[in-house]
Image 1 (cartoon, rainbow, N blue to C red):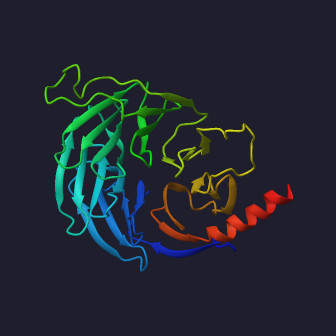
Image 2 (cartoon, rainbow, N blue to C red):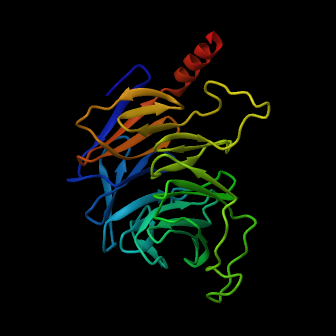
Image 3 (cartoon, rainbow, N blue to C red):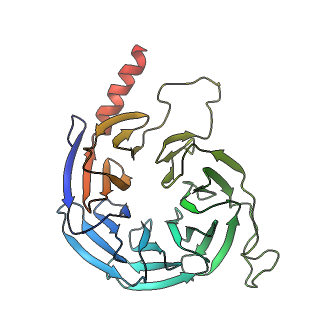
Length: 304
């Protein structure tokens, strides 16, 4: 699985069944992965060595995310909780409970002060990363919330669902939480999304582009904002690396075909690095030469 623009850097072996979630640390030096065995493994992204195993959930771990400073890891689980871990010691610092069903997605805000979680109960919850208190509940999906992401400025949250929609929530303008459960300005208030995008398939990965014009998802890039002049361009500003079906893609261009015996189950990208978890228990890490790709795509665009 190597090409002119990509090289396989490391194989992380140690899982015996399907990898459910993977995430890079902000500096790209570590990879966290989770499995059906209720644990989280921390890997050295350079050597492929397993550094630490985090255990504490009572059911499978469905998602993992590093804090922006890389010092903490948040994990969600079918045990209906979110746990906050010290990324250095591996100690569990806090357990957040409040969802009425399995928690399927988790992410940190850009400033690290909040955690967002999505659940099979159809809601997205916002938590204070320091106290563990639930600040807001975003309700509106008709099925499981399977992916969540903060915008780069932290003012919006995108939630993807099995109901084949993506909702964009304007959390900057939403009411603040109250310490009194059920209060009109409390965490149980149902907030309306500012925008809804209908999709052809279930969304299970979602991320904002740096300029907030696109969402990168498991079904490809989804445009949120059209160019001011209304013109369509071949590649626009999408420059994200992601995996869709059996392909590693860059923007809207398929790059590398993944062999059929490797079925992707999850992925995460950090700069030019891409890590992919597979149903056979393998975790593979790639380097993608995006500068060469940008140059090539620019040349192709000028020729069109």
